[in-house]
Amino acid sequence: MRPEDLLAPTPSGVCCKPGGFFIDPTRPVDKAVITHGHSDHARPGHGAVLATQETLDMMRLRYGENFAGTTQAIRYGETLSLGGTTVTFRPAGHVLGSAQAVVECKNLRIVASGDYKDAADPTCTPFELQPCDVFITEATFGLPVFRHGNAAGEIKKLLHSVELFPERAHLVGAYSLGKAQRVIALIRQAGYDKPIHLHGAMEKITRYYISRGIDLGAIELVSGAKKAALAGTITLCPPSALKDLWARRFPDPVACFASGWMRVRARARQGGVELPLVISDHADWDGLTATIAATGASEIWVTHGQDALVHWSRQRGLKARPLAIVGYGDEDESDGVTDGATDEPS
Image (spheres, rainbow, N blue to C red):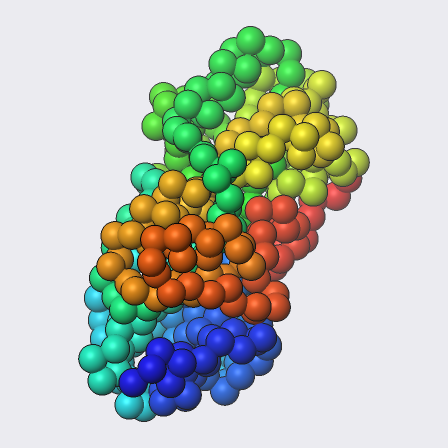
């Protein structure tokens, strides 16, 4: 069996014809296998959705109870038969509930990574390497310039700034699903035990993380707090809120942004970010290349349109191709409104 006979790339996502399903489709389909809850991969309107319980819960929080015709939860390590194929979910280490989809048929094994990272994250199950014949990899940061470094070191910079400027409030822009909760957990690991404040758009998902046993310490909403009381505090908010009238309620705010894109200093300056924090929930260049090599796959399919990773793979004797899937993108700068919550009033 050729790989294309099992999984066929289309502009709307990867289609498994023998199994009758799509993986992370970007338009409504009859049957969808969803790797994680970010809005560029998990969309409403499908007839049936297969995903981890956490991903299904995230979709309900964002889109409402009727986001799909039917749903089915699958656990890590569980194998289901779909048509003439089997599908197994393995941890991707990206966000809570994120998974790699392992699709097998007639001795052919293809792994669709979804989004993943190989770095430690106290808020989700670690990435598990999956040997395979074909590896479909993300490539959000698929350029050699992107090397994320140590997230704990970036948190140390943040806490040093908080100590240095006790009269100012620190606003940390972070994606509402996954990044915000990871940043909070890393702050706690660094020994900071004061209440951490939240923009209202982040409350539902953060409370959900806590309900799943993720210890984030004392969390308070900004709404109702007096301006003077916010001096010396840390607040997590959607990146768009850093430039919003909402930010004016804080005393002399320090604009921070936790993202892999902060490796590009010009991007930080253009966004008015005073304290860039290079913290990403995606694998960096070294993580991507190391993972590709370790899978043992002879063929690599690259999403997110990064030709550099295709070139790297071909240089090492691997068959490689980019996938032109419309709709996958960077969720780090998405607004909090995608989480099904309204912004706090300015």
